[in-house]
Image (cartoon, helix red, strand yellow):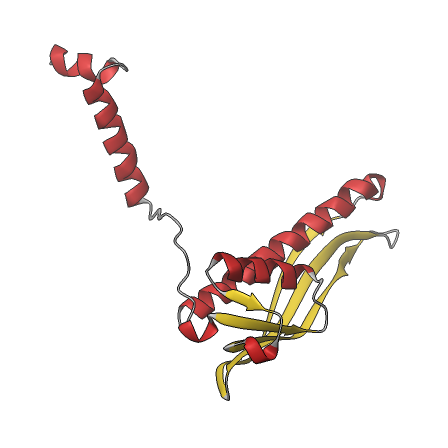
Length: 173
């Protein structure tokens, strides 16, 4: 028993390191942890044109970057494309959720809505769909600058979630 205890408590012993690595690996596997792999975008989208009214929107830029990371060539001409990802609507805003007794806003909701479709040739890969994600936050008029930054960070997190959802949807095709 003392030999076993010596190996487990001696951090410089190679066997104790192996046991620790094995234990951590088993814990990660048991909790469902998986290393993120590159999504399997359909081959029809190997050269994709992104059609949008606003090519500078946060969603457009993040989605374009994520497509490029997935190995899709985002082209600048419809003629060069094998697929067209159309952003039919790209809208973000906030609305008041609750007010105080003095009629001052206390809680806001930030939302981001995307209406999109995907076509390859004359075939529709994804019919027009709408996704809306929301986040809410409390508001304090004494912390205006901090709350403006919080709203922006929430908006970025929403866009990241929207991008992940659509990439996952494309990967499942």
